[in-house]
Length: 303
View 1: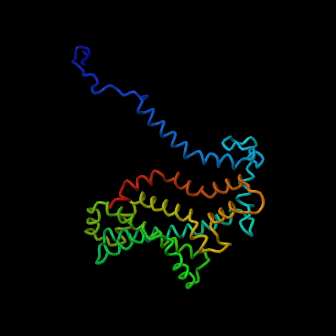
View 2: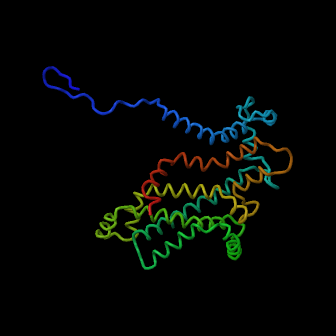
View 3: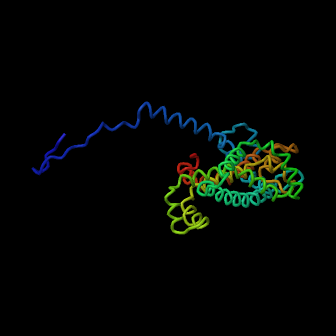
């Protein structure tokens, strides 16, 4: 279609198909299905949240989906500082700090070593590098349960069994294969011309790593950090085996609170303790979710 505009000439009108209607049968089915799936996954979280702010008398009435009529934060206070976990009645607070002391060095050391190892395997090939990389990949698929007893023996020999540092060593070692794979694949996706140009300019191993690779590697560092934080913070098996009562991480403390057989079962305290334990991984995901997606899309899972 053409329109005359002041005798100057003709202007063509818009081309292309007619605009699609937003409210179509396809969109109704699609978004309706997504809403049902979202509600299915969010419903347990809603039950936990509202239950954690109810009194036990209200919980016994049986309406688990209704919001609290008598709002109280006492279950959260008790879960954090007063709930009994075995012989101790200091709640999750001690387990939280134990988890922090385990998490920070484990994440820092494992990511630092894995980033340098992945950079080496991607850009500084040497004789046997492919064999080493294959061994690392195989290590990522070895079941943890197979290694429990040998690791316990080794930690006992070096005097780290039952300590927080022993658990730091365990998490650092078991986090290495996957993280090396992530960094190696990411650095392999970086244009080789950058690496060669830096070599021509006289940059060495560490110069290229710190001046070129690190500045463009924030997404993959976030990917590795999220994987490590989630795996270490949510770990129960290693925590209950390789630490002692005073050094239990938060997940083990949570298990002791929820599975306590003494006294009345306080569901509001249990729900509050569960939410408190999951706050750290949730906060990390919400704070760095976009960078996580960027890291995955930029080569984290490319071979």
